Image (tube, rainbow, N blue to C red; front, side):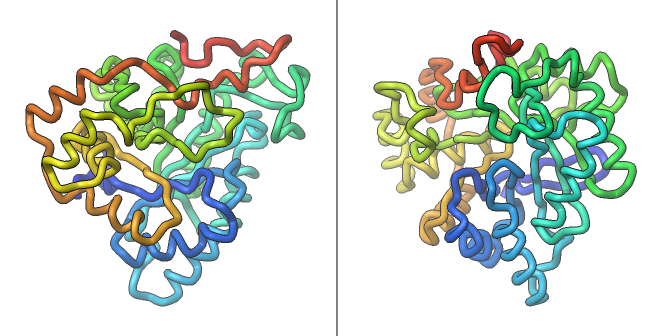
Length: 315
């Protein structure tokens, strides 16, 4: 298993278990299955609505004693309604309570978008705060304070463009250690990968398989399928692997972390086994040719008439 190394010596297993869209009745078992089969990296978020169920799995597995808390990397994310500086640490403590943990290994600003504190799911433009009203740098400074208090070991961001990273870096001495973004062969983001590598920022790839199970309202008509792509299918057959394993392995070989989500025991095990082979130069060259800058998660759901958010990804 490839590992991502951090400045303080901490290491993160490249393949983790994602929990976005994992239903409450299934996610506890999924996390237990993952941990008991060798996963050491679990990705969570407050807005997923299932952190208490993930926490139940942690409590049970850690109580057993065979797997120790300090051997598992847990990431969570600050939701958009807690960006004001006085709201950050209370939101983090709520996540820790739900996850039944004393600290997180990594805490991320989920989106460069701010809601009013009482608007978890905005109904209109009036439920948003502008970035002038809730500056990212003030949210970031609250994350730095959380790190100083020992509530988190590492801090970073999610869904940040190169431009937004540049802006944040220009205002702080504490550079984000991670940027979690959509990454897969249809959205390879080579320029962002190069920028982050240059500045010592790791990347985590979400929706690595194309996020086919996300809500219909987030889907476009006639979306291209990664799992049905002829090139991916051909390379999978060549390696005796599944199409999903090819996509996960590709992210890992690029030096990023990758967090496929599943609640199916066989698929959870299969995803971790993606680390068991090597794509060759021909494979990588063919996959490089698939880039079409297609986003499955396009961020348009934040663009409401009357608010200040448009072109979330600055492109």
